[in-house]
Length: 226
Image 1: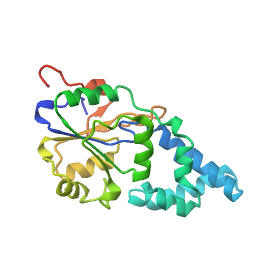
Image 2: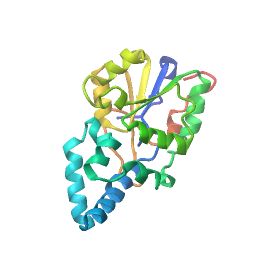
Image 3: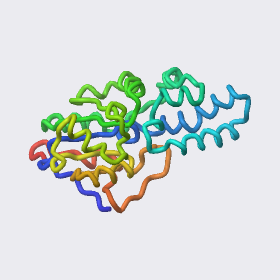
């Protein structure tokens, strides 16, 4: 889909995802596909290859549900202290290019900023502490508090009931195509994706949603707000 700058004069609320949108997904891919399998292999005295097969199967069983994003679930399921493991590698967490400048420009236009993430509250806390970029948000919302993942039917209606927003004047920026599709079903008007959530990975292709390469593409004109 052709990329055009969002129509900022028609938007009041800007909802951001966190991982793969504001933050580089490289950290999460490393954590889930390398560090956890390595740790599980050591604990269970198996090869990393065997461990990765087991871990991927366990991921597939709960993908798209809150369990997939839950520190508590994986700590219990794998017998690994996921909190401590994440904190041991926080130096690998990185902010995507031009995020802070983009947020600053939106604040200057008095846009309402909401973070809406599937991340477990503890994961959110770790990344808030490490990055320091979230003070500008009116609210940080973990889908765990709503008891639904963002890609699950009814999530956006439930969010609207708890934290009112006008779907016709709201933009959602999220790297997950399933999340964007569900938001579209629930009538959010402006939906933008991320082309390369993991800076070291392959880019996404979508005919459904415009995909952002760099947040510079989205910068509003500070004079006109367009």
